[in-house]
Length: 352
Image (cartoon, rainbow, N blue to C red; front, top):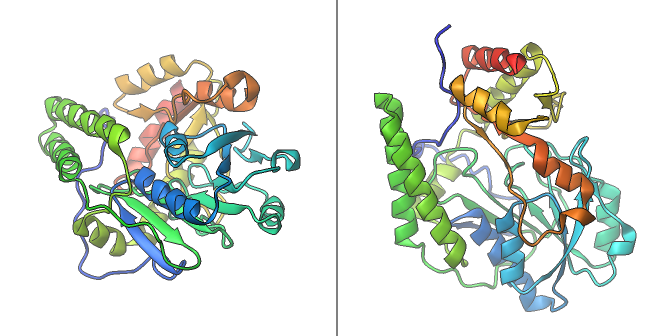
């Protein structure tokens, strides 16, 4: 079999003619933002209007941009560890004193958190903010009693501004800023380079796409705010064929599970696909991650580490999360791929 190319940035999507309204009717107010961090930041600003305690109970395994949103909104961070077996939170009742907001997250499409603990938080008057970036299209991806849901669709499709924020009760009281044209231009240019790379099989276009993407990304990290999304991106999200997206991702994930052979270099983090999960990636643990990434790259497979250790985290205090950061690796299994690509990927993962 010829070497296949799996992974990499999405090219830009186009809106479908019929809106499915997948995100509608989940809460009383739905807003679209420039990015997931802008969406989360807007939720936190909205919370700050009514609650001045500003102490957030957040996962020790998460993205730096999530924590930056809390810090920029004036929150003090209190961390909880994450189990490496299934990425479930290691919440402690003793940690809740003074907490005003709990951040809950389902990882890579799989929701593995204790609903009873969340009920305790609700009784204590703690607001629940759910990061839906990884669980956006899972059937159980939205805790039904959360106060806010926020996340990014950029890991799911090619979109210039993928931030989504939903408020369960009432309207957002935070004024939205207009979308930043420089950011949108950078995102679109990066995805256009990616389209040309695919069509022409030219690695130089991929290099250009990566360069522009990171220039745009790093600029956003320094200036993010409650920036609204652009109309085209909203149309893409509101017309997304979620049924097909879910079905293809689930089929691809199951194909991998059925064909790959686990080893120290590749052990699936979620070795079973339950009926409610829509995987964002195939995520696994690897004993020697750098060596694994190098082998996969040589076989035409791009892999990604989610995430680097955030600078605001003391790893020594959270040993399980620290271990996850050092061993976790993800490959894409999205709707662009089908059985032949997944069988190839499974064969290569089995050779590691």
